[in-house]
Length: 298
Length: 298
Image 1 (cartoon, rainbow over the protein chains, first blue to last red):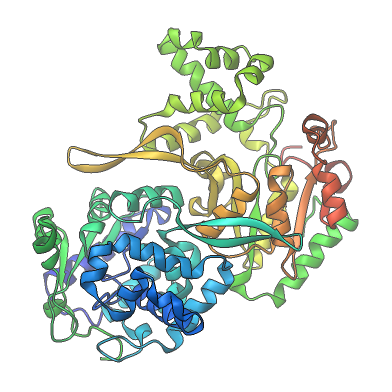
Image 2: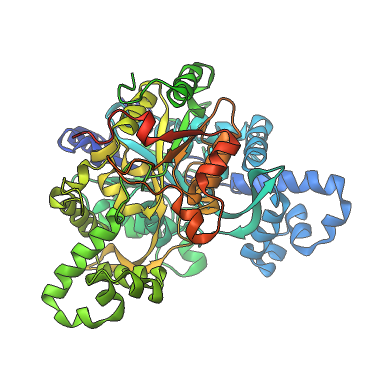
């Protein structure tokens, strides 16, 4: 069990939790995983951003004038200063316009097609292979113990859902994420949903994550795993259960992955999530020390 | 199989659909059921309304001045004209205030407790026994064929979810319904969700039903069952699949249940849903003719 987890306090905390599941009623066995930086690599850029760039490049191929729009120009040239000046939210909403009017099926197919070929930006391997092997092993161990596994992502729900079964074995209806609004219309008499470029509610981060999961399943998790300040409430919410496991990934391995866990505090002035996690008694995963393998192809 | 379904065209349509499921990939086997009037009896009043009245009576017992509020006075006296004059939406929102500040766990427990004792208003039997036996048999037949069964109700998602496993064998996270907003706060340092009296989005009726299920699971149903104009888009959405089953319950049995299917058109001027169903080629269930048993205790 858990072959890619090195012996030590973190693995012990995970195993102790798994062993305690026998005392939990099957209906209460609910686990929640953040996605970016928790189940797959989010550096140097979010995979969803890579997808948007891929689709933007394709759109510009057909309509070159799109490249002149400031939000798109900043993305195409990778000008982080320009993106920062415009604001990431404005840039993200502009990118959502690329998919306006698409049916869910068309969007879903384009995400799947992207993962068939997209490489990771700096490591060159297929993007779909940038999932954390130790977390896949944990998902398996949970399922073997009849735990219902959900993904609660800040990413777009349809984006994550398109690959959740393929990459993680998590069915589409067990993904909660940031949602967009749909436009309902009849086409040739048949009811049709078409994407808009507007969000439906707030981005799925922070307290919004636990509100969204209340709406989606109305059960409290006994395990939550995350890696950023946007996961804090989710981990605290799970930790209130008994038994419980609050698992925080500390990205501290520049050799095999990336080293950035302490950056957030530096940029925003917030207390780093790793400091919060250690104070709260969460199981903090040091990628460098606790994982013998990071990616399945290592 | 389906012992409470009498032989005939409706049962044949259901069996033909069940037999065709072998040609459908397991991941595409998705069925959606409306709740009120489709899985359980909605007359003379919605069970959720009965629950609200029960909780209102308890609240008035502690705070008699509540009975003077016009919305509550109309409900307590059963004055349908006064409810109509105030508007059902305003009355419903006033009733939601009874639960403001409750945690999800407290609300859930009070719904469960209500169903432990509540009788049906006119038939006297336990409210929890007012589920349609033939539909329970259909749910079983679907599950035996690895169909994922969801409830898509206009009722409150937490209300339906509290009893969905007990009454229908449908897990809490497979219920989609009208949602309320939560207030997030920390109590003694622990993240807590508290009910507000505001809806989160539109009531889950009509086109909102298919938008909600897109957000919740992102898969298209191949079976949809309903009984009112609020289910029209849901049934049409399912009918676009191949194979598909659009099942409409026609409440035409005053002796064993209620006879009201054609009322809606009379009141609002809309075309009756049963007329739409017959024109669209849906399988229209005549309770009088197609069901040998209506309720499990019959």
